[in-house]
Image (tube, one colour):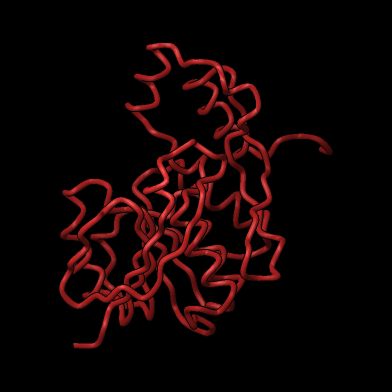
Length: 228
């Protein structure tokens, strides 16, 4: 029926409202500076009306179940742009988007010509958001909820802003075990010194919607695995 919300959209919107009653999702176009591609869009939290201080209950709800998928984080935005402008050649390749969140990176990979894209996230709502966003952008993704059950091999593994928790650092070497090439986009780790990786570029990117993060967090560094 015209005007009726997609069931996944309704579920995601209701979840956001359960955390922040004044919040809602909005279909948001992304803005890139180094590519002419202008069509990528995601369902993200609408910043309008969200400038009031959060109550203690709202803060607790956000920290208990963070809706990471409702933001396009700076590292993901920057990595998606690199895929669309051809900085990382992925046409015809099998790609795994680890910790996909909104799946901005996976969607960009599909738009850039990847033959298959697997969106991986532990959060079932992130996978639903990824599917909804993929549909909005006219691409198909496959979905994986547990990285450690993956037994195959991919050409490229992409990971953005997943190392904010020090306990996730060992994952980097696991990435190399399942992918011929790994690209990590990160804005949080100041001394990334993982064996087998080199810094390949740095750019500035801002999370959408803008969270007013520190300038240091807006500096995105790209690390690429090297053949040993």
